[in-house]
Image (cartoon, rainbow, N blue to C red; front, top):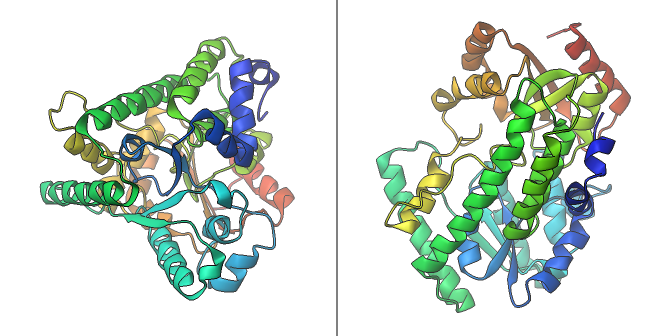
Length: 391
């Protein structure tokens, strides 16, 4: 199934496809499209795009270098780093496009991102000849979205705002923050309208097509991607219905479509996902009615759909099953790379809700990327989707 001809025949979709499949070229093109602006690579979904845009930067979601061997990661990282995180580390230290990584902004979205930041800071001190890009850290209160957490998150926002102004000499005004929030809200609105076509009973979009559109929007200027997404949505309303088992996905982040394509080849279709390269990215808008725009931006990131590692189990106990039900999923797939198993913490409390909703659960552990045995993985996925389950 994957990307169908009905999608590839649409010019707007092809442009997004080209961005997604050749990200290095897409990021490099930002230099020409946005002259004078710095390219800020964001590691984690809790770095506010609005703040970077108001600082005359173009935010780009960091993606990994996954070609083997990963020489820098193999040399500097211990075995507790899963292949996904190794790919991100490789991108900064030995990867392509270093010359268009003007600044790398890390957040505490996950513990592993924090560790990568700490390792890179140490490496920068002991091996300055590597000429790593400027490294910055943005701390977001994530564990429990209480009022005290909100107050602390606002303080952190202002601290980072001041640091950007000092380091880059550009005054970040409330007016510019509001303008950036409006642009980001429009982008999220466009993504949500597109997502409705994969969540409807007569699903019109494959998971691969959805991940391509969402992922491309993360690595290009917001205004440009919004226009393309809207054009794709209008066309996709007339695409053929996807005849496949609807699946809700959680687990290791998927920054490419390899797994989704295997799922589709096995008779399934991902109609929603619980990871930062999928539909969590466009959860919630910034409340533009709020008189204090910086606080409104903070609230958007603090109160959006929490991830597994940083969200409390009790806050995700019913939220994830409810999401799966809302998008029409009949199956729930938990897929994890080796040393990336935090998602198991949530499952015991979620299981009764999935059973209540009649949603089948299946988990796959101990994976690596690139896949070591795609044929075996496809066989296992086919067994799950066809009803021949073994867990």
